[in-house]
Image 1 (cartoon, rainbow, N blue to C red):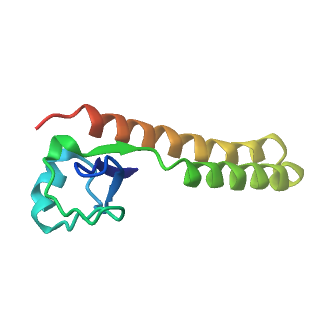
Image 2 (image 1 turned 180 degrees about the vertical axis):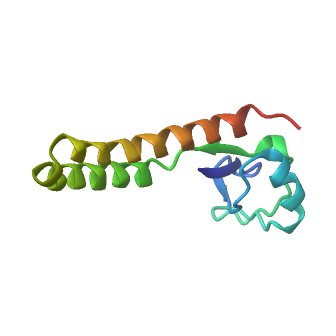
Amino acid sequence: MRLYTICKGCSQDVGVYSSAKSREELQANLENLDIRCKHCGNKAQPHVKDIHAELKLFYILIAFLIGIIFSVLFWGIFGMVGTFFILIPCIYWIYEFRLTHKFNISSD
């Protein structure tokens, strides 16, 4: 999950680097965050409701590719059981999707 906010100066996405999984956790750590726009240099302290989350699709794609490779490799060894390796990225994707959705709809 990637957290970001919109810069008030140039309207570009600004990444928020935090391991918070909910807005409540983010609120507790918001004072410690240094949020500075890389485009215009504007430094601001956004409100928690101005921070949004989105999926990191690159990592999910890599997980699917690794799952497909392991499914093909283990198909010959375990047969149909080897295809369960594709379920691991699916479960991860569902987990990340629900976490992102929960973060975006939660209110403070």
